[in-house]
Length: 157
Image (cartoon, rainbow, N blue to C red; front, side, top):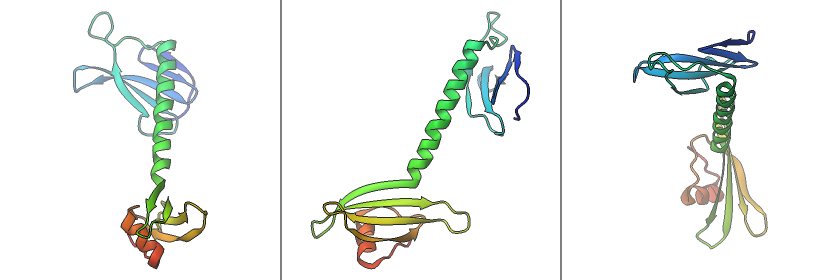
């Protein structure tokens, strides 16, 4: 959907970058509302919508409902962005076989041509970097993998 002028129809509201559109929900023969952000091809939010008083047609959109839908859609997008960010950065603490406490920090670089990770292993007590370097994009933070990386630099996927 693209940004165009504001609209306040019973089944279509547009304000700023957001559009709410009431559509038939074919799965349960009811109604659903889709929230689109300008420039996005897919809805940011899809949810059930209430039937009107006649029990056939959808309840008309209004300012209060639209405001709530915009807030909910923004919350969904924020949680999704945070989840993606968290998936690209991981930290775990381990105790190595020799008893050393180590913190492993993995940052995934989702490069189209060269996806990889950057791994840093730090001694938790004195902050000394034990080893850092490039690892495979599929590197998993396990005790065995971290110990092998510290000992040999092997960071294959």
